[in-house]
Image (cartoon, rainbow, N blue to C red; front, top):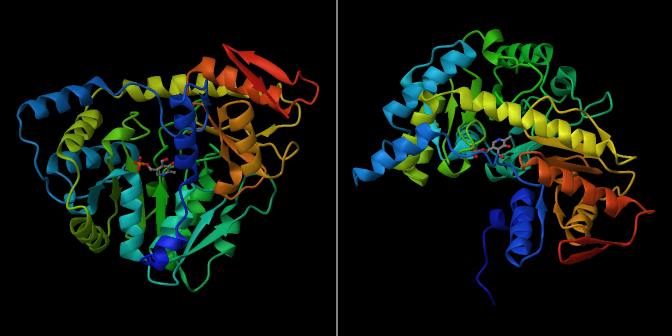
Length: 403
Ligand SMILES: Cc1ncc(COP(=O)(O)O)c(C=O)c1O
């Protein structure tokens, strides 16, 4: 008889994005010409400011533990960034730096949620939200829009609130849909949450990755004391520094940030010394890298949409930000897991099934790859779904055969 694992272990599923990434990587390692449109990280090189600072620090040969909730230098850089982008001045004890936005959010949930407390978020949602809420003992409450399409209104959110609601969690622009929540939506939710004393978490990890001159509405513009408003961000998507694992949470509620700090101190002790140095340098360095990244991503998005338009029955809402597009493929197969599996096996294209984001029938297609990969990936998807196309196509020395 094998030794039993915890109830928690049996309840927590794999991250579907990491799973598809792993499978695509394994196929690639086996020599298969896989096109990866499932990823969640820009291929953009790291900013020079970050690389130089990390090298300099490494050469001191002092790579040690750091203060548990972040070095004062990095915290100050985060507060400078926050003041610049949100127009609000926070103090050093109102920020915690963690191993990615993901750990910052998880620390928050552990600090804020008691068993049975409800955490509301709209669908489609980032795949990790439900599992993270459950791991913290909370109850995920998923809100589907009532107006059709991918949109969820502020009223849809407010209507889901009960006496057990502890947190409302908003990610704008949204992974996977790329939609930005409107000024009106943000204003209503910020004012409501503050008045009702409900935590409002803004997962703003993509807030600067926006296109066509659009801006992500600023929640701080509508908050008064903002003791309930938690802003989460990080360097992963902003600078393509996913490998540093640096994110943060900012909140005017010192008690909350203190509790998150204690949880972090007792679990991971602190962040990587080199990572903190690199993140601080990126935040203080030349910010034109962000505008450059947006320009590339916007061009990639347009290429992707032009390719998608060649597939007759796919429905797309133009993404306003992020590097994802969430497309309705239900005409071809309402089972998005089966469809993603089929596309990986037959067309060697990795995409992520929509069901993992709470929207069956959809696929999430990333456009953080290079344009040639986007075009080739979409060409293969079109081929795999077109009944009238030849059953076989040649890709280099590989013959692809579809159903
Ligand atoms: C919506 C959202 N929040 C948070 C994260 C986590 O980012 P980090 O790499 O900073 O942990 C991601 C990464 O995919 C994300 O899509």
